[in-house]
Image 1: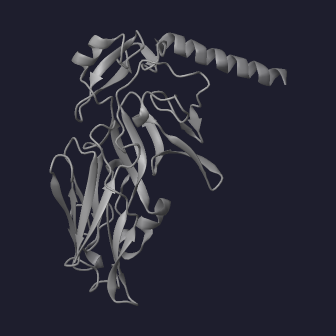
Image 2: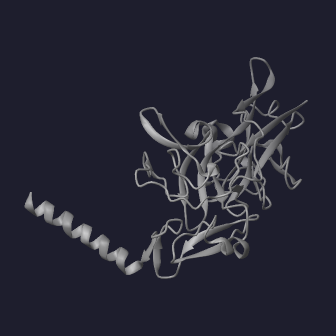
Image 3: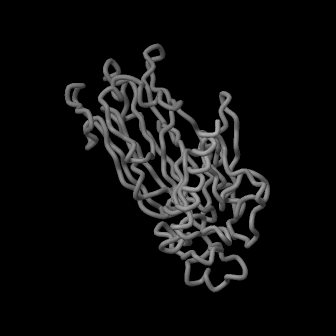
Length: 317
């Protein structure tokens, strides 16, 4: 019997239509949630984002404010790179010694990704990661490119494993293609831990940020990998204004064109159709706002002025 797990990017992917408007957000819009900055085109208050697909929520968990994109906690976002880091959910198959059967562990989410959303799974920064000594998982784009790939890891015994090595012995990492906005995984009972549970009770699979991962042999012999961040690890999304490429979008500068700063440039998305905005060379700031990009020297002067003012206050005290 196969356990089919569908992991969708529910963060704002519920049929969000991402045609941007030229309206400038109010200065009263909150731009911070906990320790995470929320720069425009994103927003956490009504009428504070570029469009519905860029809406985030600010929730209090355990007394701490945290931003969320749907059900996925947001760790950070970059305007210059067009990326967002979120916590993605690990799935696992574990042998239960009491029932003598394999049991699914992890979070089930609906298959809700939409091509109209700003987000794509980063093919550059993510890897489909599988951990275990008898593990086979399938990753598939069920409603987009038709991509199907395998993640397989194996070993004869615990002594085969090497810390830091993820090349198929106890751990494997597989690349994904561009233009994926959702994915699902399959796991088969033909590959399970029922015979090796004494040193490897669980196997794991997750699409995650490759740069943050360093394989440890303890991930095979314990549940340490799944215990971190409540069964979540970081994953990178590429975001963009998805309706047009630069050559078309820039012709509508009085309408829906999102690069509002006069000192900004339009950059085509490298992951599916769409574009993003950057400040021109020598400028820094937010290219999605009319006066968002300022000369680098002015930014430095303002920073030094703030430092001098704070130093003066300290001396006065």
